Length: 178
View 1 (tube, helix red, strand yellow):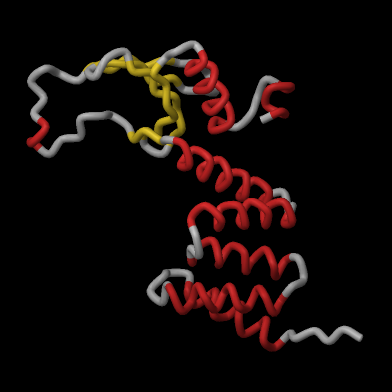
View 2 (cartoon, rainbow, N blue to C red):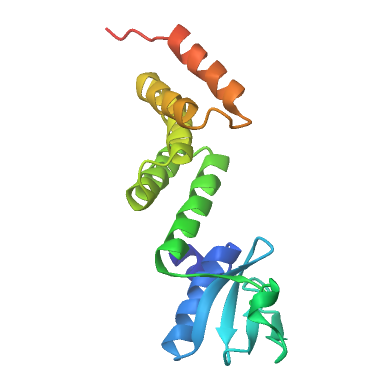
């Protein structure tokens, strides 16, 4: 967040968190939102209308829910998914984790995984990610345990064969330290 403030640029999620905070401090009904996978800021004007702000460009889209919209017709009343409190923090940590991984900053990514696991518990996908990171950091025994946990919990995952191959490599590559 400090980088985003000092450089006046950043990821859409970070910019959205900051914009949402400023709007809430100005007593606006603002929350983070997901619209077709993109992070934005939702500012409610009333129950039926509001704005969605794209945080990187500041572009605003106004929406109104028609008066004749029926709640029982199966159509979504909101054009987006609102994100609250812990969900915002989880989204930020998940995006930070992937940014750190892409920059090969595995120790920082591991910190994000540990924080996510404190929030969501013993999630198999976070254990898989932690296993990958621990392997990158030279901790094959702990990596193997986490990857095996993922295999046991998610046997139908499409990546299971790759994970099982990694486990076999970890078992074959036991390092002895003297």
